[in-house]
Amino acid sequence: MIEGIHAILRNEGFNLIGVLNRVDALFPGWIDAWLERGYAATMDWMKKHRPIREDPCSIIEGGQSIISLAFPYSTEPPDSWIVKNPISNYAWGEDYHVVLRKKLKKVMLSLSNEIPGFQGRFFIDTAPLPEKLIAARAGLGWIGKNSMLIHPKFGSYLFLAEIVTNIKLPTSDHSQKDLCG
Image 1 (cartoon, rainbow, N blue to C red):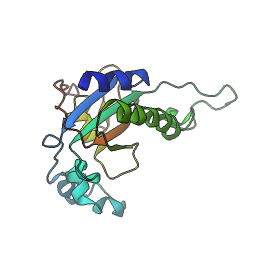
Image 2: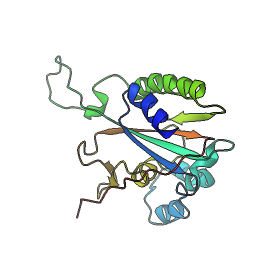
Image 3: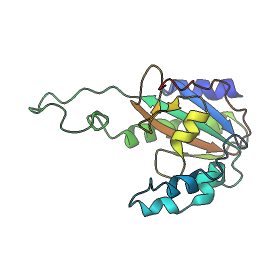
């Protein structure tokens, strides 16, 4: 089954894929420690949805696994710009939410057609999921000193997305070594 899931995802351009089963997708206490250190600053919304932040599979009824996706981006600035790099290069192209949403809608339809009983939802930083923690634990990179997920080839130039599903899947076996020293 996992090979079929990977094939469907690769067909839509997702080549960085990791999976966490529900047990490995538990992050107890991380949000409280993060808040206590003052990392939320004025982001009061980070105090909400603690159960989901600690048990991301609980965001859907019967959630059993998370498919973590990292989509590398490399964009070129528009030719019309006179000033070089006035905004971050992840915003130079089409809105990544729109691009990834189109791809993930196709993926979800294919998964529903190919896997009996498949149910799930996808998220593109639109839910209180600890995306970077999920991606790191699923083997897509490590959390660097800059607090970003870092991949050995693509650095932090990654868009993250998750599919939370009711299907029990095995956790990926390819953790990344922290190379930040």
